Image (tube, rainbow, N blue to C red):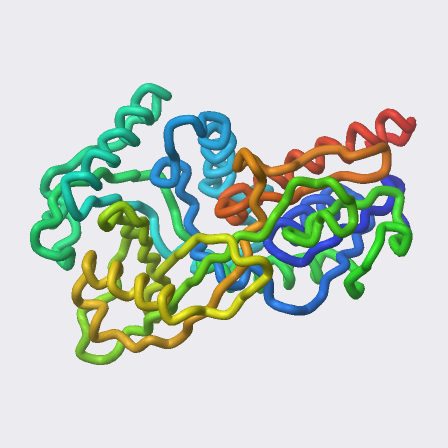
Length: 345
C-alpha cells in the first residue's frame, strides 16, 4: 500500500470496518481490510437508526453520539455518508413506538419524559391506530420519532463493499494477532473478536435472534415505518424491507452460540403478532441469530490504544446507527497520528 498519508489496515469486514475503510481511503490513506468472509452481526441486524426510540434514562452520552451519527446518515449530497450508497438502502423514515399494556405505557412515558429533559421531545399519541391502522385493537399509547430511519442492513454492507473496491481498498484474509499485520496504523474493528487481538478490551458477545417475514400475495401491505413495541415488558421491533418485515430481537448471553432457538423464535412471533396481527399471514422466510459486541456500560470503544493501533468495537445494538460517527472519529485519530509524525494530511 502506497500513499503520502501512509497505510491503514482495518481488521473486520462488518459495517464498522467497512465504514472506517471507506472514510480512510477517501481521505487519502492506502487501506487494506482483513476479513473472514463469514457473515457476522451486520448481516443479521435490523438496521434501525433509532437514537430516540432505543434510548433509556442513564444513556445520555449514547443518545448524544447517536443523534450526531443520525445527522450524518440523514445528510445527503456529495461527501455525505450516504454518497455512493443507493437510495433504496433506506427502508423507513419514521418510527412509531407503542405500548401493549398499562405498564408498557408507563415505560414509554418514562422514555418520553427523559427525552424531553434532554431537549429531544418526541410526539406522543394516544391514538396510535390512527397513525398505523394495522396495529392490534387496544393499542393506543405511544410516540412518534419523526427523524429516525431504517436501512436494509445487507444492502448497506454490499454497497459499502462495492464502494470500497471502487475506491481502491485492498482485501485480505483474517489475522490471529497484530504481528501478522503490515501497516503504519491498524484499526481493530472485528466486533466480538477484538479481545483476541488486544486482550483486556471489555467486549463480550450477546446473542440476538432475528426473523425475516416475507409478504405474500393477498396479505396486508408492509408497514411504511418502523414499529417498535413493549409487549408485557419485552421489546420487539418490526422493520420494513422491500419484500417484507424484519422482526427482532431477543437478547441474552449464551457464549458464541448462533443457533436460533424454538423459544426465541416463538417469543418473537407471538410479540410481533400481538402488535401487528396481519403478520400471521406472512411467510416465515428466515430465522437467524447474531452476536452483538457489547461493553459493560453500553458505550462503544472508539479511539487510540497506542501510537499504531486504534479500536472501533463494542457498538452493541447500535452498529449501523453509529457507523458514520465511528468513521469520522477514527479519521480524526488517523490525522492526529500523522500530524504528530510530521506527515501532512
